[in-house]
Image 1 (tube, rainbow, N blue to C red):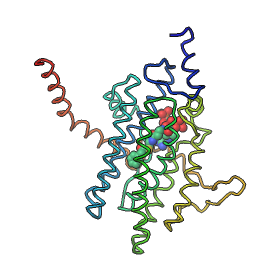
Image 2: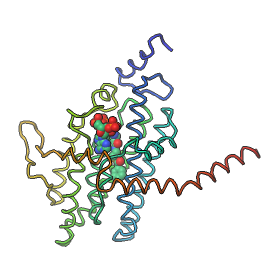
Image 3: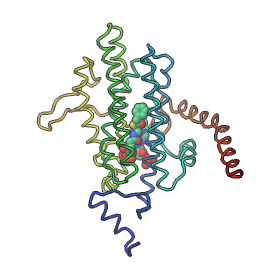
Image 4: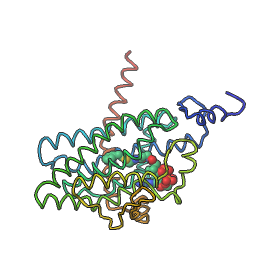
Length: 309
Ligand code: FAQ
C-alpha cells in the first residue's frame, strides 16, 4: 500500500479505469456501492412479483413461455447483482436480512399493481425501457464487477423491452376493447415509470458524490429526459397516447417538455406506503421462510460431505 491510501483509487478514477474487489477504496465508496447494488438486486427479485402474477393467466401458451423466461431472467439479474455486492465484503444473507428488516430499499415501481394483461406489456415497454436508459451508463461504472454484470443484464433488458412493446402493439392494433386496455395500462404506468429515475437533481442526495466517483454517469433528470424523448416516438408508432397534456417539442432545447411525476407520491411509496408495499414484502418474507428447509438441508449436506471426504 502506498503512503496515501487513496492515491491509487484517485488515479484509477481520474483515468476512467476500473476499481476491482481487492483494490484499496474509500469506505464511503464501498458502502455507497453496496447500497446501490443491493437496492438494484432487491428490485430485480421483488420485480418478479408483479409479472409473476400473470404467468398462470397469460393469454396463450406462447405468451406464458415468454413471460416465464422473462421472470426467470429477473431472478438471474438479482443473482449476478448479489454476487457483485458480495465482492465488496458483505454476505447475501445479510442483504436479505436488511431488505426484510426495511433497512434497504427496492425500486418504487414494483409497488404498483398489474391489473390487466396489458400491464405486462406496459411494464415491459415502460419499466424495462426506463431500466435500460438508467442501466446502459452503469456498464461504464467505475466498479468492475458491477459494470460487467450490467453488460449482460442490459442485453436481456432490451429483449424484455421489445416483448412488452410487442404485447402492446398486438393489443393496440386489435379490437377497440384491446386498444382501450392497452391505453389504460399506459395511463397508469407512465408517471410511476418517470419516478423510477429518482428525485429531481436538486433533491438527489447521492448524485454529486456518485458522479464524482463515476458510479453514476448522468443525473436523474438527464436520464429521465432521455427516456421521455425516446418513448414519445415509440408511443406514436403504437398509436397510444402518453397521458401528459404538457408534452410538447421544445425546438430550443432539442428535447420534449413534459410534466414531472408527483415526487410526493414517490417518497410516500419509498417510505413503504405505496399501493402494494405490504403485499410485496409479505410475499418476500414468506418466500424466505418457506425456503428455510432448503437452506438447512443444503448446509447439512455440505457438513456431511466435509466429514466423510
Ligand atoms: N425507488 O440520491 P438519490 C429493474 C432513493 S430496474 C426507491 O437520487 P441514487 C429491472 C435512493 O435510494 C429498477 N428508492 O439516489 C426490472 C435514496 O435513498 P437512500 C432498479 C429510490 O442512488 C424491470 C434517495 O431516494 N434499478 O429492477 C428511487 O443516486 C422489470 C435519494 O435518491 C436500479 O436500482 C426509486 N425509484 O439514485 C426488473 C438501478 N429513486 O438509498 C423486473 C441502479 C431514488 O439514501 C421487472 N440504481 N430512491 O436511502 C440507480 O441508478 C440509482 O440508485 C437511482 C437513484 C437512480 C435509482
